[in-house]
Length: 244
Ligand SMILES: C[S@@+](CC[C@H](N)C(=O)[O-])C[C@H]1O[C@@H](n2cnc3c(N)ncnc32)[C@H](O)[C@@H]1O
Image (cartoon, rainbow, N blue to C red; front, side, top):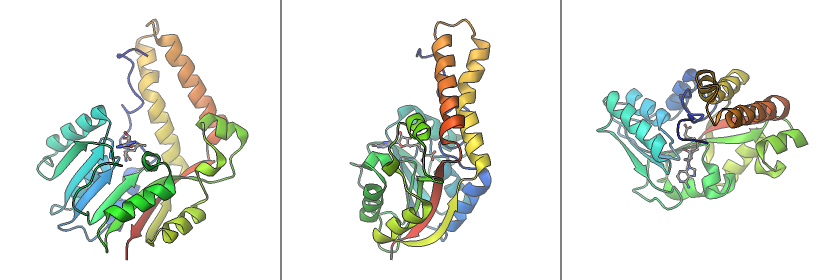
């Protein structure tokens, strides 16, 4: 697809099924944050990290990601909101980045970087200081996946687990659970719709562009896979975890 075709990120506030209200609750679940050193592993454009440091003027944040476009968006947002003195966004692979042990780690939708959920939880345990907290967002199965769901996601059934099994795994990895929530249907529908909207709106404005047919086909395939495959089957859980 040509460079003029927008990404699915244009209309997303977060690259996850996450409402403003839940984002605020998640930040609250990580308190106390005064003076905290927070590292967001796989931060994307770091919107949650920015909201966290906005909510807690004495907190400082580092975001790590490999996506240069997302990082540039996050840096511009940080500067526009006067947060750039307290937030640093670093272009690096999260599996190779090391810094001083954070008080709070965030890893939302990035467990695949470590090869899966267990490896991500173990990596976060190794990074955090004892007594630190982790906000972990990861895929779950809300229902056993059908073949259509798996094929739409390009996933295998063992790639995700139930929310109960995810909590069990976090505890096996040494964490205690401070808070748990699961993205609701509205958050998912908003996430999927906004993801499609960037390209749908581009198509309306450029119906005869050379890439138009390919973009239309890709959107139709994506929407079919979502609505007829994984909608209300793939879920997303947010765990606030403590490392005793
Ligand atoms: C689903 S997005 C979530 C972004 C962000 N946490 C949010 O909630 O908006 C996953 C992010 O992980 C990043 N990522 C994946 N593999 C990575 C790696 N090995 N090192 C750094 N970032 C990685 C991607 O670039 C992407 O921004």
